[in-house]
Image 1: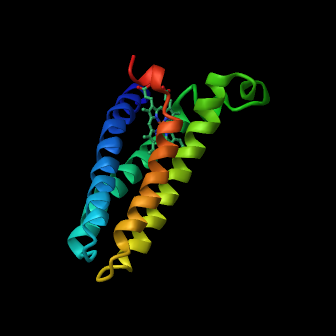
Image 2: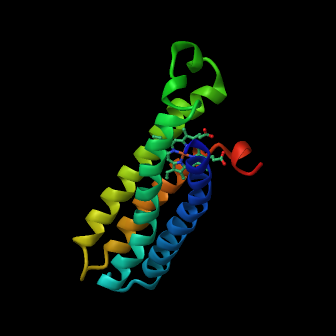
Length: 143
Ligand code: HEM
């Protein structure tokens, strides 16, 4: 089960980046066109939202079974940069990123018919993407 989840979480990482880039790209295009935010534009925000939500659920289960997750949490592990990344920084930042993305989507949903939805998605998803990029274990992932 551990290896399966590890692979799923690893492949889903690409889907998360793709989903966020699609949602963010669409918002930036809409923003530069200065048009009204429509329900179709809201749906483009779902790419990033759904991919990140799925990934967090898989991540939480993985956290419970991985030797790098909860079972590795200790005072000593905090002093080691790699251990700290996996048991503390990565989960915390990813959850924060998803909260930002969820708040952004919820706000934008209420801005249909105005021209503000694009800016909301661009800011919240943009910040979320920065957090995600900052705490991906790049070396292990691209190995
Ligand atoms: C948007 C959210 C997230 C993204 C994009 C993401 C991405 C990744 C990536 C790319 C890896 C490296 C995979 C590899 O070695 O090939 C990884 C590992 C890991 N992630 Fe996440 N993650 C996210 C959320 C979470 C959350 C919320 C948790 C826990 C609560 C979590 C727990 C872990 C753990 C424990 C590992 C190490 C697994 C192992 O090799 O044993 N992730 N994550």
